[in-house]
Image (cartoon, rainbow, N blue to C red):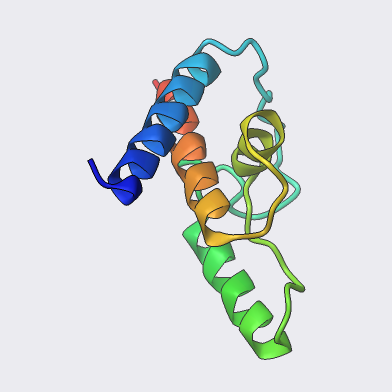
Amino acid sequence: MSTATGTFSAYAALIMAAARAWQTCPITCPRPSSPSRTGAYEHEGVDWTAILRAIIANLRAGETVQGGSTISQQLARNLFLTPAQNINRKLREMVLAAHRAQAHQG
């Protein structure tokens, strides 16, 4: 097994273990009667419009000036990941948030 494959497998195992733990996590956020932000509950754990908006703003500024993370993504980052600003962490954060959203639907 190559080093890249081994590293990917390790990340995949970590993400799946965290997702399983998160599905049983007793922390839930009650839905307010009127969200403070339009569209706050109209996503599946990842708000693609907010991410795209942040990418454009950050590219224009040449540095990180906006974030596009949902509350689910922020919770995933704070509970299971590091605050490092890189694409690998962001992708893992998105996967965990999507798993969390799916686990709490229906």
